[in-house]
Image (tube, rainbow, N blue to C red):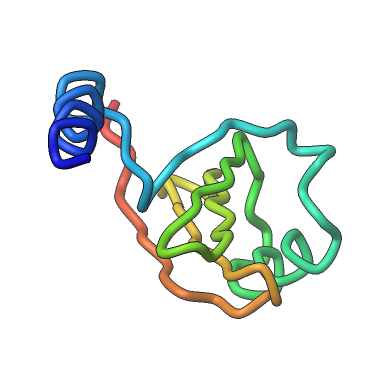
Length: 93
């Protein structure tokens, strides 16, 4: 049994696989309404460019990326619509 656990651990280590966190790109059209509403309320005028679902500690977190003016914005939103984090960075030309 220990050998099996060790082998699974090595496979995960060398393939970059993690049971704790996964990211999946999703279509903007597939983002739930409450998530998109939360993003637009948090950053009015945001132009959404991409979306991902991450699983962190068995919880879904939506990552919405977009631009507003000269800023790139990344918003992490819990499945219930709670804003977890907003990152803003000035775009470099």
